[in-house]
Length: 268
Image 1 (cartoon, one colour):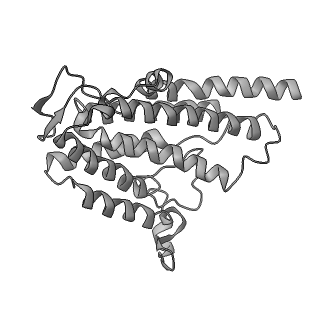
Image 2: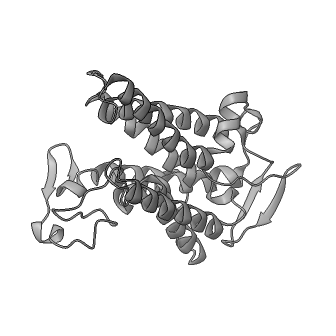
């Protein structure tokens, strides 16, 4: 859901974070991948609304399929958004736009009271990660390259259990002190208190690691130059949706809720 620098030909520029990025116009492959993920997200939310709001029996829409489907969407969003860092005209502006959208989503879902309000959802996560990446770039502390991306990806997987009180992989799992989860003020970080609830929960950790892994590879790819196939990749519908990802995200759920409520009314 990031902004992509548009240019006519290869050039080297120094962006707002002080790094040189070699780019050749819009990178079409990111639009295609993001567009596919957005459509997948719309279908996922439609199934969710039909089952949990309209009350339709969808027994197949349950774990583990539901969890895998959800992860395939959100992880892709964050990785691609990280890749956008060296291509964005301003990561600070991008982060603030996400922040405004996240605040609006929280307000609307709180007022509508149709489902659990969204406190720290995926758009909040995109905002927080983008602002952290912008800050790290300004401090010249943003990790870059394949090794950094691999380490960050492993760290991301190792922190998957953080909101539930554990960290680690496989047999090497450490249980964290329960005192870390006694405060209601650290849910944004990944340490939710006992009474915390959100309709969509993507805290800063572990998801910042996935975002920064994308940024680490994005900087490498931008410096080396993207191949022609990546720049020229186009699938009309997917590319169009991918270029309007944030707009689709903001608009689609109210539309789906109306449809789900109509279905629930028809069935009632």
